[in-house]
Image (cartoon, rainbow, N blue to C red; front, side, top):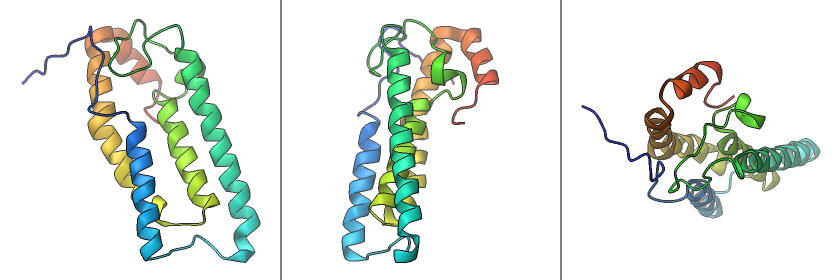
Length: 160
């Protein structure tokens, strides 16, 4: 069975992908209010905060590097068509560096807030991201760029 893809409209998603991360994190914080679950005690505080800051700022930098690489080259919003296949900058290392950046920011924030619950929710968020967002993006990119996109997929991993 073939699924038709409108390459003039973009991959489209029912909501912005960032919503998965925000709603998942807020839901995890709500659970944490009822059943607190810390990552570590005072003896790990310096390490936890340091790692949290590195992940948060590193993820933020990676996200914005991905955005800057897209800027002026192709549509950033998922409801806009792609004008070209971007394979430079962070896209030479990951097909989804902005999502990798979001995962790192989410992880870092969990460490900084000293709560395990967001980390327990994260695999479900990633699974939903792949199922609802990335699968549409990849289907759209295959339909739009064909063999060029398939060759890119063979060279560059989805995540890292």
